[in-house]
Length: 136
Image 1: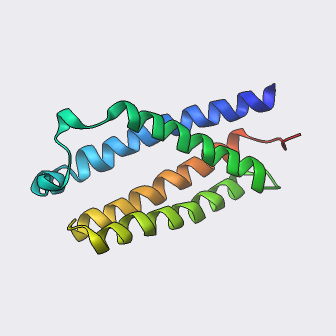
Image 2: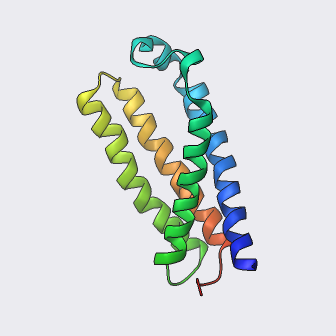
Image 3: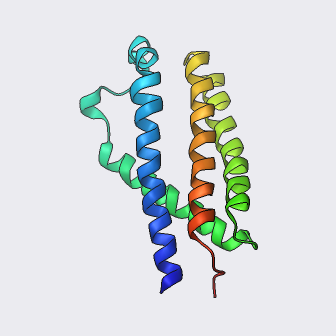
C-alpha cells in the first residue's frame, strides 16, 4: 500500500515537473524558433493537449516502473544515474534523430537534448527520493 503510494506520488510529481519544464523550454526558450518554423508544426488550435497530458503521465509512470524493477539499491544517486542514462537515450534520438530528417534548427535540436536530459535527471531525483522499497 505504502509502496504504491510512493510510486503514484512520484509519477504525479514527475508529471508536474515535466509540465513546468516543458513550459520553460518550449513555451519560453524556443518560442521564437517555433514561430520561425511554424510550417513544421500543427497550428495551436489543432494541437492534441489531452493526448500530450496522457503521454506525460504514462511516460512518467513507465520511468518510475523501470526504476522500481531495475534499480536494486533505491537511492537518489541511483535514480539520477538512471535518469541521466534514459535522458541520453531519449535525447540523442529525439534531438539528433529529428534534426537528421526534419528541417528543425540546430538550436531546437540542442535545446531539445538539454530539456530531455534535465527532465529525466529531475525524474530520477524525484523517484530516488520517494521510492525506497523493493517490489514484493
